[in-house]
Amino acid sequence: MSDGPRVALFVTCLVDLFRPSVGFAAVKLMQDAGCTVEVPEAQTCCGQPAYNSGDRKDTIAIARQVIAAFEGYDYVVAPSGSCAGMIAKHYAELLADDPEWAPRATALGARTHELISFLTDVLEIKSVEAAFAGTVTYHDSCSGLRELGIHGQPRALLAGVEGLHLRELEDANVCCGFGGTFCVKYPDISNNMVSNKMEKIVATGAETLLAGDMGCLMNMAGKLQRDGANVRVRHVAEVLAGMGDEPSIGEPPAVSPSGGKD
Image (cartoon, rainbow, N blue to C red; front, side, top):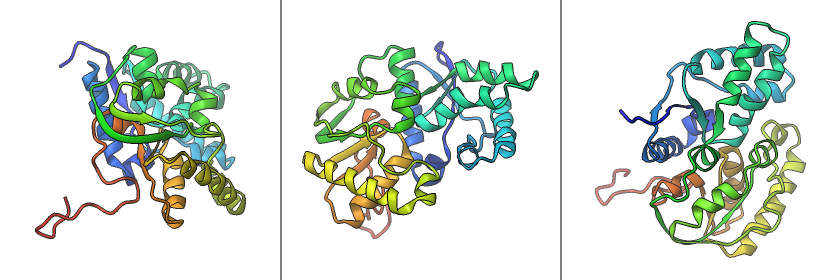
């Protein structure tokens, strides 16, 4: 076991259900940085869909469950700015009037970080050993950028990836139109926003789009694929962990010569 910090990985629903490779990439990056990483089995959702829908009662119940499952670790880390922001910023606010749970929520929030911010700001990692051939562009997710101040951290680590060239995206800080339940409540506005985002992505000429939140990535990957754009989409953790050779988000699994899926 490492002498480094004991970290609990908050996997997130979208990573668990749609892109488990992001979770494995997060584990690799933290283990390479000297952490002991555990994945508490009792974890579920962070409660953000209920919170965004105004369902405070169920959000508080979920928050209590998450707090109980993740107490006792040095840090809690999520490969998502929105889920990390939910735990770090909103649990204490939701439970502010509860004398038992308010201090527990505040303590957990103070130890909770988004993955790339944790590597750079907390562990002070300056570079990772990874290679990725090609030009990429990067989208800043709203929660990561505005709630947690994540902007330069992923760019700093990507700058050290062998063979990777980062071409900045115009309006990289503008929402992609996902916004959790926003895309369900306002589909026409959401589609217009992601259409504008797609035009900016294609205009960069980059072969690959990176970001740090699966909701944004799935939204943009879906639009790019529906419109026939030749841009692959990956979570930034996969590239930094040297796992950028897997099928991109939305791509079917590779088929081996024997006919089976790799």
